[in-house]
Image (cartoon, rainbow, N blue to C red; front, top):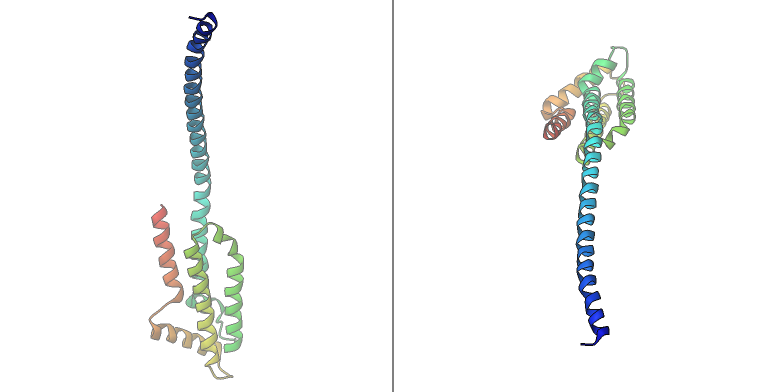
Amino acid sequence: MDPVLSAVLEIVKFIIPALVVLAITYVIINKVMEDHANRLELEIRKKNASMLTPLKLQAYERMILFLERISPQSLINNYNDGTNSAKGLRHLMEASVYQEYSHNLSQQIYISNQAWNIIKVVKEEVIQLIHVTSERMPQDASGIELSKAIIDRMIQDNSIPTQKAIDFLKAEINLYF
């Protein structure tokens, strides 16, 4: 056999196993690095979740408090002192709903989109209930008469607008915790 060919074959005998070892080493190191990166990502997610969980829980608490504050019964108790006209009481209650809502806008970051959408719908239902009931009242109606009309309407409809949202939030929070 030709000495050059023999030398090339000897070199190939060493290079091929070295390349195979190199390729296997590369694959193993790549896999180890990938596993390490996945573990780090999991740790970061766990840490973020542990920091976000109290914020999410607090957001649900605040949204339930918001819904309790804008419930027609609560608004009537807080603003009907017997001295307001129906229009005056209507404006106080509607302003309170808008103010409470704007104060809690940032909470939408921490709750589900579905929960936030329900809260927005309920806010509008409360305002609509107050507004429509007020519009049906005589011009000289008192705040007490408006309060009674709102409560009568809720009894007639067999519905407290905020309760369905509170029930939804409670059910949703029970899914997470």
